[in-house]
Image (tube, rainbow, N blue to C red):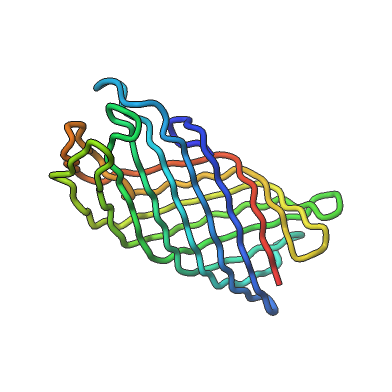
Length: 217
């Protein structure tokens, strides 16, 4: 997983689905982890961000045939948390901005078979709107005199493209590339003088290769 500043990290996902006819309900989990990077070293070199995110989904959907392949749409609830930190003057000395929100998500997925047993390619895209807050807390030397909790509405857009593989059982393995953009999950400005003063909100872009698994029953 990479963020917009090309920091290294990791991404993992798992989903459990139960279907009947052309309908299904699903439960999904995603983990995002991006390394903190190097300490802040001046006004022209802003600190890299460390990101730990967890996303939970509950969805209902319907599938249908689309040419030689298949497609489905889904709607549901999404809950997301992002812990975002920066190294200001020393490692671990900056503020921690913790976003937490809950809301709705809609998604659309396409799957097309490939030559070769068990392989198909897929693409999917989703839109979510979450109501939540960004809470700023102190780490190490930060006294947090001006730390605040900011109410926010976060809009998330996500997309994936990749390959599915199934050996005929309940598990479908996935590998591909994904991108997520989240607006309103971080502060726009946070000071470096030790009081935690914040202004505005800002977005977060993460992208990179992924591996995941879906279990269907």
